[in-house]
Image 1 (tube, rainbow, N blue to C red):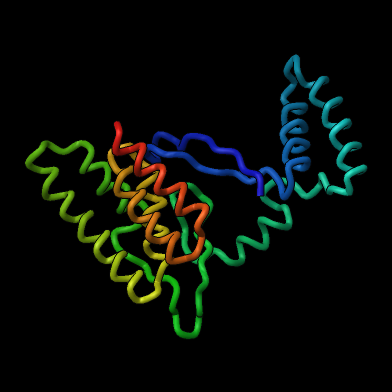
Image 2 (spheres, rainbow, N blue to C red):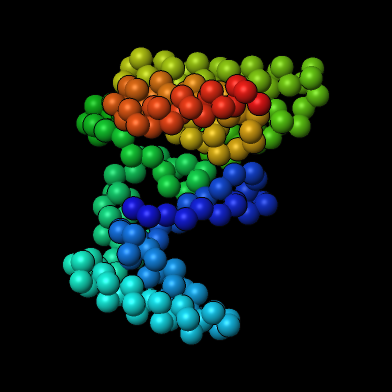
Length: 203
């Protein structure tokens, strides 16, 4: 999938959201150019011309430029596998056994309630911060327990939502995600999380 990111609305708090552009790079570029061509700007005509050129190049490469946007086949397939929502709008995909319910468990707070807790931590005085931070530490502890019981999705969801907030939580997010990606055998992402943690520790 090719995606683009944009800041979350102010009402949703800090962070970004992702939107799917296409199932391949040519489809994504074609989608963006067509979108630009409909805006009525000075670049609209050039965008239409480029879109036509991209379409011809894609046809020669046997790529489908119509396989674009949120409705593209790859995104539809992925959406069927999502087990939980995340603040970046992509959700998480992990191995999940519906019969045994192993692979994911819901931790609280999550979603909007988690973001409110993170907001309180960021805005708190030093004395209050300890109290709110204790709530987050307990949540991370529950995520570690979920990992021990093979519910890796719980900590993946938490780590992503921590990362998609204020920079205050980057180090904790990186620690959670590095462990989770290791357990999920997603080693390239494990390395990225480790690097994020290293860079966060230097600031």
